[in-house]
Length: 349
Image (cartoon, rainbow, N blue to C red):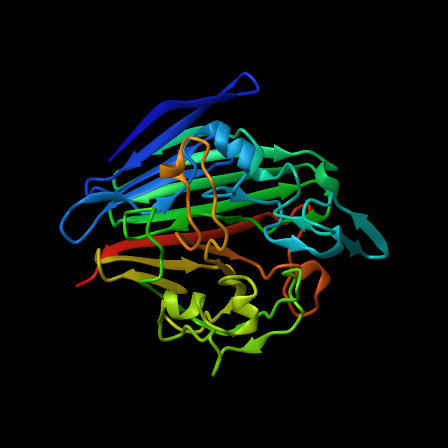
C-alpha cells in the first residue's frame, strides 16, 4: 500500500494538495485538501482494466467556481434547512440563505470550502488520510466553534471508509455527509441507467415542490421508491411518478433498515462487473441521480451530462431539526459526534 502527495492547485495563496492512496489490488482513492474532496476513485473492471468510477470537475478553479459538491465533505448540516432557521429552546437561530429561502449544505461557506490540514498514517493492511478543520462560532449563523476531523481509510480488503468526528463548545447542529458520485461504467459520458440500485429501506421521505421533506415517512411498498430487491436505475429515473419526473430523477431521502445483516445500499453494473456496497451507522441516505448537467470550462469533453452519476449521501434525515420524528442532529459540548460510512468495492461472481 502506498500514499502519494502532489500539488493540485492554489487558492488564496495556499497550496491545495492531492493525496492518492493505493492498495495492491489496483484500487485507489484520491482526495484534495480543499473541501476534503474525493477527486477520483479508480478500480479494475472484470477484465482487469483500471478506470475512474467517480465523476468530478477537472481543475481546482472549476471546483471553486462551480461548487458542484462532487466528492466533497458536506456540512455542518447536509441537505436543506427550511426557511434557514431553527429553534433552540425558545430562541430562533437565523442561518444564511443560499438556496431560495433555505440553507443548503451548511450555507455559502460549508466544510466543502475549507482548506483542511492533513496527516497520513500507514499501517500493515490499511492507510489513512486524516483531515482536520474548524468552523468558527457564528459562521453562516451556526453557533459554536466546531472542531471537525474526517479520516479516509483504504485497506487491502478493497474498502474505503469515511469516519467523521466533531466537538463543539456551544450547542449546535451537525449532520455531515460525502457527496461522491459513482459511475461504474468507467466512462463519465455514459449515464447510470444500466446500473442496478438496491436500498435496504422500508420508508422514504416525500418532498414538497421546493425539495423540502413534507415531514412524512411513507412505505416504499408498491411505489417506484421500493428498491429493496434492486431496480435498474433507468426504470426509476425515467418513472412517470410525479415526485420523480418533476425532478428529472431521484433526489430523495430513504430511512435505512438496520435490523438486517444486508448492506445498507448496493450499486451494481453488469457490463463492467463492478459492485459498490455501502455500510453505515447513519439512519438515512439521500439518493441524487445528477438530474442537471454540469458544464466544464475545460471543454465539452469534461462536461458531465444529466444522469451520469449517482450519489449516495449517508446522513440523518434532512431538516430533522425542524421536523418531529426525523431524528436528532444536535451536537452538544461534552458529547462528541462520531459516524462511519464504508464503501466496499468488488467484482461480480
